[in-house]
Length: 206
Length: 319
Image 1 (cartoon, rainbow over the protein chains, first blue to last red):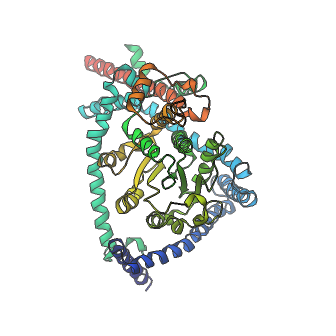
Image 2: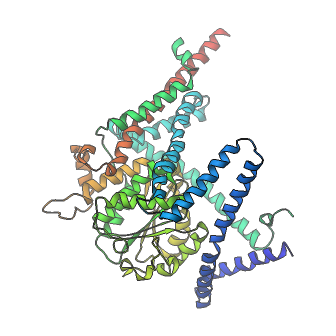
């Protein structure tokens, strides 16, 4: 029963949504409206689950004084303080919540992402070598696309951005489309397997 | 020759230092550089422009990212908002991740500093943060009735009662969706809003994600795309050249024209230094840094490969 009931819910609702997509009948539309109301009511519970999970994981770490437990204190303090600031003074411009966003979250997140530039530069210098014909083609394509992305490329000659655009529009597009078609067919096959109850790994192992 | 071989084992901290300088100096000392516009960005601009002053047309800006990708995506959002406010185009905003919620307010407030007369609920409306689990039902629901699917805005007001909703019902009116994201190109909007309801979908993506979107651009499923800081700088430039351009013949900006674009590039008019509002030239200043960083990386690749080949030929000679 533990596996059969969820399986039945997935199969029945899955087929209902397939029918809803292809049959624009009033009953189908009413069902969708009803579903919208339900999902709106249900989704906030996911937040509680998330908070519970975070509290349990980090709370356990703090209690047991696990390695780097101090970071867990920072995580939980940030959770409590940010939520408190939001509930207490709102989330509009000029509130402590917005201050936290502009002066803590924004610079820290941007800093993390910007580290990519340093790693790319270092990797390009240390590892980007023309060791084979394929690597040479990749290397030349990278140089043309990088130059084509900046104003200097077009200032040197219009061939650079034109070539960069050709690389993106032809070989890149062909490869991406091939991958997308493969992924698409895989998704259809997996969806059918789920709808027919063949694929059950999402139910867990026991 | 030996120098190039020795450079092979250069401490990576020197590389980091050079990259930091290449990025920081152009940011601290901005200089004028030319911005060339491309068709995918022009297509978005023209579509937004075509909604000018029409009460039965609106755009939806979807913020699907957090602060980490702000340097690339935020200038795009500011530019599109600026364009819409300049041209009296109704704007709706929404986000499906909690970390994007403050970004929406931040973007609107940044642009509103220059357009204080724009009012929430009349000229624009922030639908606010909606849980990701609601995304597909909402995308589908908005195809039938926006006020039913979204229900309330970020300020807790019933959407159906807002003046902005007059003449706006579904994707027939809110006919352009621009998805700003660092990790996808609006796949959900293409799959549901575009395929089922015929809504126009465009994307603002980080440069690393741009390559993935080309198949959808070619098929027309994506109307246009702003890719990374370059895409943002192009939109900024289009805003300067057309939307905010005012003279006796064009009191509310002039219509888009490729000839004018070519003319401004050839004559080097509408420079970065001509724009006085920093938020409206941020992407173009950033492009100076990006130019320097790209060139530095290319130099690194060339030096690294020269050293590699010299070392290789030396090893052959020794054998």
